[in-house]
Length: 313
Image (tube, rainbow, N blue to C red; front, side, top):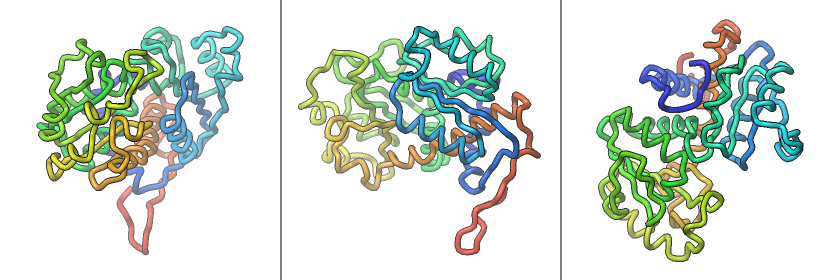
């Protein structure tokens, strides 16, 4: 695996190894004992993805290069490819890229001699979000096979919906979609069901926000919660063990009642927490596969709480 671009490129072995490494990283401190430069080239707004990559990079001891699209040569007409090649030329070892073009990663990666991670591609893919979502589900259920997962909301414009539906199906889960009129995507070969059926029958209820920046079909959301969102009355009909997920940012009171965001079922902030070790695991895997780092260059220390070891390295 030279680059981390799509969930479709991941084998079962790849997925399992990343999840296992993420588990280890929650119990150990890892520091790369050599200089590694990383740059996060974000051409769209981001809080969780960008900042969790920064935290992950700093935890691993990487030097994080500053990039601000608004103050870069992109404002002078420089292409994404030339920006990436510039960072490669000056000695960057790893790039994380988010760009509004849904297929940007198909055109450039074969010409790059450093690993590239897709931090979001238009409406098509968000593979690191999928991995942290898988991590969250696996922590809860210990499996994917035969789980019923509902993805609810703006399916048409959601890269998270596409990535998650594909990888969960590969892992043996039963994926169902639910969308308001005009926000379905018929290119995804999964059944659409009403929200009340989804909420009552599924083990995982994964909500999505309306992506106003990508379309203009829905200009008013006053009635969205009651008609298409997760209300408190719908939450009470969920299975006892079912969980609520959301990739965030959350539109409180639109796709989910604000009181449910931190309820006992919610794993929304746990998803965010899982983003750091998952992204650490992905970066370690890529750098090792490129021969940029080796096991003997990674210093590992176990976490201790109350004098007790929390797990083996």
